Length: 302
Image 1: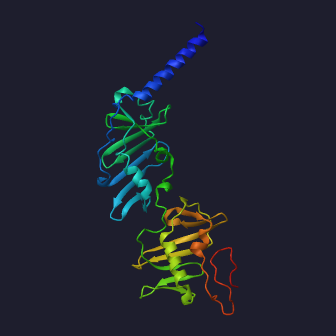
Image 2: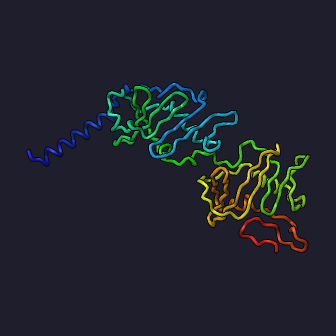
């Protein structure tokens, strides 16, 4: 028998063996529904610590107002990302093995790609196996193979775990100061604009306020220190808290920077007019009948 034939037979045998592993799924009896990795309830978790092999650690804490990412100061954490993290203990694996049945080093579990500490429950994240791309997860003395949804957890920058909403969901705005327009909530809970608009623009004023209350960035990045063109000040109903944003002029998008948080929020270019642009029937300067435009591309009053 030639060496090439022997090599082909060996490769065929390996392929057959791997196929049997997939079909019969050792570690999980056929026809059974796998139990979750852990019985830990997501509602009971109050702290999360994530360590990554090549990224900075992430620490989250649950408060009365929701989850926060702890950096130099507490930042609102992404509800979407937190649901994914909290759902990991309840994941039902494809297969499971005792730790002694695998080489932890080959599985990327020693050292791990990432670790997840949910209160006192430790879950270790390893490599993906080459045949199906399933991810190795270890909890206590068992290693699990699960559908891989962990690449983002391992590689993403910490800014991806910050809530993309610009304002808290129930934020009560009292005043919005834009570069050329101010909106103030009066004692009768009606929004007033300065320079004043006529009654026909009351709907437009409310729409602008609603856009600010619900604004959500496409993505968030670290503040890059780029010079800004103007400031926006948002004041909330208790008159003690303000948020100051700076407009970073970019041709393809609207960027609102929050240097004290070390963040900048990126919006599609059309949001420039949505958040900063509003037409008034009369310009602020007497004799100028052009509509007041806050869009940077629009003509400004002399």
